[in-house]
Length: 404
Image 1 (cartoon, rainbow, N blue to C red):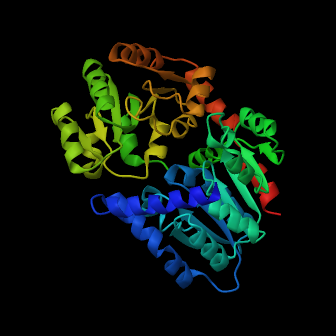
Image 2: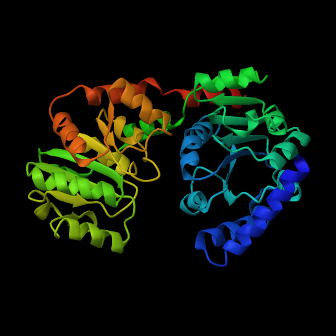
Image 3: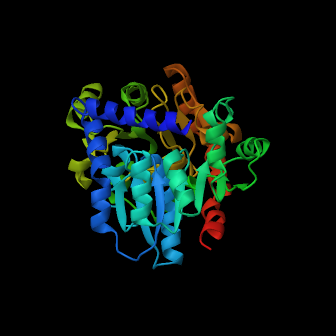
């Protein structure tokens, strides 16, 4: 199985190289993987022992981030190496100040994995959520490096639990400890003979709670709100925006803060057409024109988690496409959350619905009815906030074991 896997990885590398001729993301991935070892040779401080964190992409990084930052806080001298598989993670966080080195992860070939471990000589390795690279795990095991998995989720449909997945299942036994998000993952692993497992929860709850505590007030947003009822719509796509604008047009007493997932000019132009130009762009706003405006389009990044504090209702985009975006950033502010029908892959969304803090809609009629209810005084926001706060603490549980 090891031989078949490694052959498959080589073919995958060839496929990426071919795709890079036509696709910019594939080109970034190929170049990043090829250059990673050379970059590390330049940046690694000889004699230092790095704690290595690996994330597939941006979402997984956000789950590992609280652990990285708390580890640095408790042990300031700790050197951190952060690697990414995906360009959508590396290109956004390559200048992340919490890590001493940020790099792509070289392709998981036996040679690259062995070379990486010999070069870095990590004191520990922490893989976040779904990352299980066999050749790296074997190289770390050979070097006697303790390996941990954090915020992991396991399901019976994964390859580890298939009749042909015995080799992959044995790789899980190389982990010093696996921190899972839920009891069902722990029970599934226990059923297959893995005992070094504990339920720590999801570190994203700690992350959004920290963001909430550190959030700054936004004077421009406050000027726009001006005591009105406000819908904050985050990470929206065209289908979401059509419904939101329709609701806004039919409810003149409500204000809308629209934070699109894509903020390039072509998309802002499409939003402008929907609104007949009746909106203010955040990048061009000033206090004079905000009070009378009904829609504020946020065409900058990095402030959405703070904007949710001004919401009476939060709408999370993506539910009419591949899946919803981050619900916890809104819920932590004790704001009721609404999203489209494609949410079932997201455990926190299902739980928020179960506790009465979130609601899924599948068409405009349901959307309008739900928003009308939530803009009145309901306990839904309180339920959402309590759910988030009651699930914090994963970072502390993880560090208690890995920081020894």
